[in-house]
Length: 302
Image 1 (tube, rainbow, N blue to C red):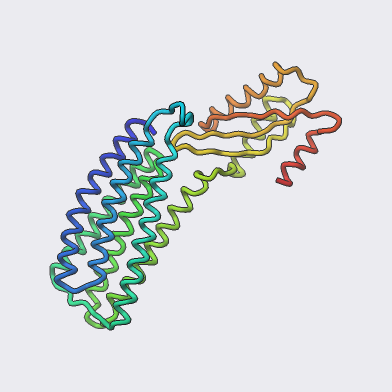
Image 2: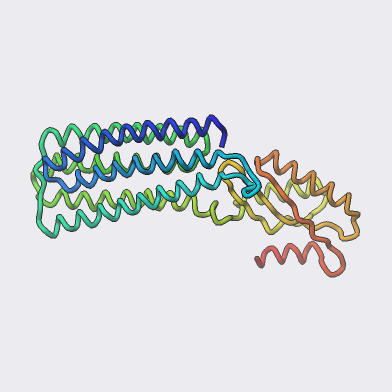
């Protein structure tokens, strides 16, 4: 991650912490005054936003550390780990929402909303969506996944506040509205957590390039080698903004080592230029017992 990207993440984190601490105090007070479990739980959800933003700041600071002897690929994966932690926090908050809301329905409790609850809830919707949009903007600008995760956290808080606002406006007609809307909010939060997990788990455990990238690499390799070299055994390893790509190619076993190295080196450089990834190629010899066709079939079996 660049220094500017790190500074952007830091500023977004500080802004988020200040805004959410103020919202937490306002929501908690409004929840106590109205007796609404949804507003009180939403206040704790807001406080969890501050926690996630603190994790974001620490994580991005660590992720920006340069490579060293113990971590030759840098510390970029800390960014993915912080996004994963935020996702876990979201899932826990969603679970607490669900339990609290079900408990309120079982006990037959309703809320007594007033003007303060309405004003605080409207302010929460506006402020959290503004924070979410800012985080999404910085994520698109920097490619930082933990910023995107934090943006979803803000949006989930804004959505929950919006649903509570609806409950406030129509809750006078149905006593169970506060608890029922709390369950719906939990569903929103669980979905946000799932979306974050989906984005960060594959880069953390390693993955294969998408089909479009594989086809393009095959074209590049064949053009440079001037024949089919059957690129296969693709693996991508993501370290924040730094990405490592490895794959195998098949070259004539009678080709001299320097010529084989030259072909592989040219392919690596072109792939690097095309996809902005650090590429390493393993060369497999072909001959009477090991043909390009055999290697291609091997690749399909794996």
